[in-house]
Structure formats: C-alpha cells, structure tokens
Length: 193
Image (cartoon, rainbow, N blue to C red; front, side, top):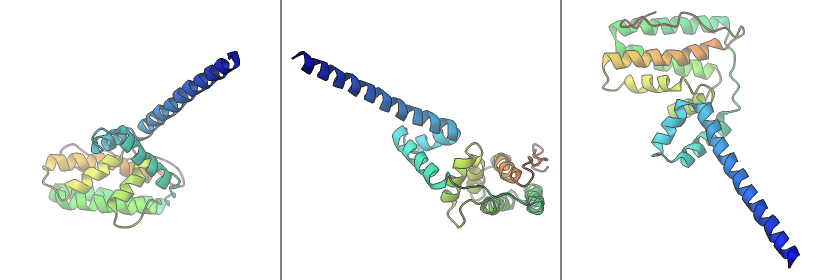
C-alpha cells in the first residue's frame, strides 16, 4: 500500500511538473514571437479577433516558411540604382502623390525580390516573408501599398511614404559593405530628400 501511494505521488508530481513545463514553453513561445515580430504580432492578433493562439500559429508558420531566407547582398551599382529610384519617387510626390506611392510600391517589390524575398504578384506572401526578417518596418510597405489606390489624404500618403522608407533603408543596407544607406529623411511637408 505504501509503495502504491509513493508511485501515485511521483506520477502526480511528474504530471504537475510536465504541465507547468509545457505551459512555460507555450508562454515563452508567445513572448518569443512577440519579441521577434513586435507591432506585427499585435496586428496579427487583432486580425484574428484577439485569438493569440491563432495569431501565434500564423506567425510560427511564417517563420517556418520564410525563416530560412538568406538575404542576398546588393552590389554597389544596384544600391545606387535603387537609391536614385527612391529619390525620384520622393520628388514625384510633390507633383503626384498617387504616382509616387505607386513607384515606391513597385520599387519595394523589386528591391525585396533582388534581396531574395518571394517573387510574383502575391503581395501578402511577400509581406509575410518580409515580416519574418523586417517586422519593425513591414507595416510601412503595407501602408504604401494600400494608400496608393485608396481614399487617403495627401498627409496620410506622405506618412505612408515616410514609413515605407524605413523598410527601403533596411533592405538597401544589406550589401557587400553592410553599411547603412544615408540620406534617409524626408523633408516634412514636401516629401523629398
């Protein structure tokens, strides 16, 4: 009888320990995903109506699908070409915010493709992949993509372009030298550098 009580107690303690260990791993995974994705984590949770488990499954799936992407470096020539295109898009903003955002959207697609992110017309797949590697900046790309055709004010479009510039700079920074690209500020109100 004493042996049976000891065995039951050991099994109960092991079950409780396993429960807390598993619970800690699941909670740790959420903290890890929250830390990795930052504002993107909150956006996905909101899109899932507050269901953190569904959001974490989606983000975990993104990491599994896109985490192994190795960003290809840019040549100095490619970096200069993209910098010139971005400057042109910013200058175009004064004349035509819609065309400016359309060019910025296309430029980010081209640059991300050259850096090794998914090719093709699927914007969501591209932004999902970018969110795994550039979670802090991918929202600016989304804002430009939606503002280029939406009913948004000129100020909202300018803000979207400024936010998208952060992703542009992050993507442009990778290259043979690994340097950050300079000249990153838009003059407030004009939208040019």
